[in-house]
Image (cartoon, rainbow over all chains, first blue to last red; front, top):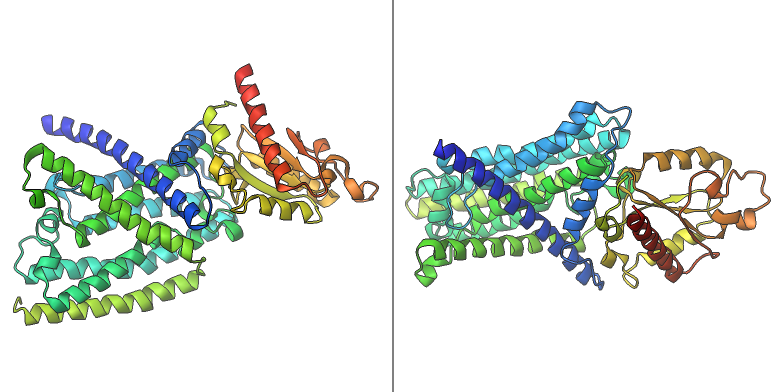
Length: 333
Length: 143
C-alpha cells in the first residue's frame, strides 16, 4: 500500500518537475535563439504563458476528424512522456519505478509520444496533418537506427568490462563507460556523443529535422488541426519529452555526479547531484537543439533519411568497431 | 469565450492575403524582423489558423477569396481578434471601383482593429497590435 502511495505521489511531483523544467528549457531555447539572431527575445516565462493561454482557448474538433482518437492522443502523448521520466535516475536519486525498467524499455517508451502525434495527425482528417504524420513516421524510422546503435554498443562495452546488468540505468550512473574504455574506446565514445547530439533534434522534430511540422509548407503539419487545450497538451508533452530524451543522453554518455568530488553524503548530495544533472541537461539542450536550430535550415524528408542512415549510421558503425577493438585490446572479452 | 491575461501576452498571428498587392505583406514581414522583434511580447507567426489568436488580413477581398476568408475565420478557436492591415481592406483602396471586389473586409467578417496606410509602416502595425491588446484588456475588464 505504502509503495503504491509513494509511487502515485512521486509521479505527480515528477510530472510537475518535468513540465516546469521542460517549459523552462524551451524558454531558454527561444531566448538564446533570439540573442543569436541579434534580437532581445521573449521572457523566460513565455512558454508558460503560451500553454496557459492554449489551455483556456476553445478546442475545435474538425468535422472530418475521429473525435475520440483526436481528443485522446494529446493525453496519451503527455502521459507517455511523463512515464519516460519515471524510469530515469536524476543525479543520485533512484528512479521512482526503481529497477523495473531498463534502457531498452525507455527506448520503446520514447517512441510512444511521437506515435501518439502520428495517430492524432491521421485522426484529424486533414491532408496537411496526414502528410505530416507520414513524414513523422519516416523520420522515426530514420533516427531509430543510430539511436539503437549507440545504446546497444554502450551496454556491450560495459558488459565486456564485466559490469553486471549493463542495461540498467543505476549501473550506468554508477559506472561511467568513460572509465571503462581505453584510448580507442574514448574516440568511439566521442563519436557516440556527436551522434547523440544530432539524434536529439530529430527526436524532438526541431530544425533541421522538423519536416513533419513544417510551418511554411504544411501549415503546422501534424498539429495543423489541433487547437486550444489539445494543442496545449501536445506542447506540454513536447516539453516533457525534451527533458526525457536529453536526460536519457546525459545518463548514458555524461553520467558523472558532483557529490563524490566534494565528498558529500545524504540529502545534501542528492540535491547537489540533482542540480548538477539539470545543469548538464540545460547545457546539452543548448548545444544540440538551440545552436543547431539557429545555424541550419530545414532538410527535406529524403535528406533526413539519408543523413540518419548513411552519415550517422556510418559514424555509429565506426564507433562500434572502435569500441570492440578497444574491448579486445583491453582484454575484456 | 473566456478572456485571460495570458492571451494578451502570447498573441499568435495568422497572416491571410485576400488579394493584396503584396505591399502590406512585405511590411508585415518587416515588422517580424529582428529590428522590431515582436517576439519580445510573445507575438509569433503561426502556419495554421487553428493555432492563431489574431487574423491579420491584407488586401481588398476579391470574389474568389471571400468564401476562403469566411472559412479561415471560422476555423480559428475563440477568443480571436481580426486586424486589417492597409487601406485596401478598409475601403478597397486603389481597387475601389473594381468589378471583382466582394469586400471591404468588414462586410465579410467582423473586424476589431484597422491599420490604415498604403502600405502601413511597421510602427503602425505594432501600434495596431497594441490597440488590439488594449481592446482585449477593456473587454476583459468589462466582463
